[in-house]
Each structure stands twice: as structure tokens, then as C-alpha cells.
Length: 158
Ligand SMILES: [Zn+2]
Image (cartoon, rainbow, N blue to C red; front, side, top):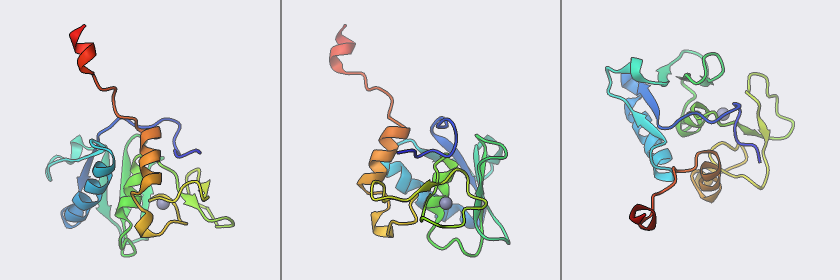
């Protein structure tokens, strides 16, 4: 299963700056990703936008994520249609691809994957919201962003 739309997974944590009006929503979305895999995102202080690799800003257009123009920098543009989709859009800021429905017009989508039974998670158009951040997303994050090797007590003793 291919999960990434980019060639290589970015370094974590991804530092995120959010425009004031979107900050609370950003914090909630980040908490969901970090519950799945600690250290995925870090919300930088309101004034430190220049420190961030990911910016969350409002737009008058429909919601979209630009993660190809200046990758590994990404900008999440939040339109009036954002609704509950911010966690999904942040997935694109991780370089993750959309898992789209067969036959969908994918103009403007970056290297989408066709949705399947094998993955029903936050990046899939086939998943219900109840399936977001479930076992399929755990599997995805373990594969794409494995946690650094833990030093065991036995190794410390050497
Ligand atoms: Zn998407």
C-alpha cells in the first residue's frame, strides 16, 4: 500500500503555525494525530510563524493544501467548506495522499491512491468519520513514520 504522495516522508515533528481564528481547531486536529503517533505535529507559538514548516490560513476559495510548490513546506488553505476536515488536510501536510473513490475526477490531487478495503482511515474518501484514527491509521503511521528505536535497559547496561 502506498501512503505517501511525496517521494520521502518529512522529518517529525512538523511544526505548525495557525492563523488566530483557526488556532483552536488546529490544536484539536494536532492532538488527534499526536494521540496516534506522539510527536507528529507541534503547534508553534502564535507569533513564531517563521519557525513553522506548515501554515494553516483562511482562504476565500474551497479548502486545499499546497504541499508540492515548496515541499517540505506546506500551506493548508481553509475555506468555508472545511467543516470537520482539518485533521485530513493536516495529513497532506505529512505528505500523505488521498485515497480517492474509483472514477473520481482527480484534477488537482497530488498522486492519489485508489481507495480500498485495505485502508479505511482519515485519508480515505471511503472511510466514515468513526474510522478516522482507527487501526488502519495506526498501521499507516507505523509504516510511514516509525518511532525512533527505543533504547532498552539491556543496551544501556552494555
Ligand atoms: Zn485530501
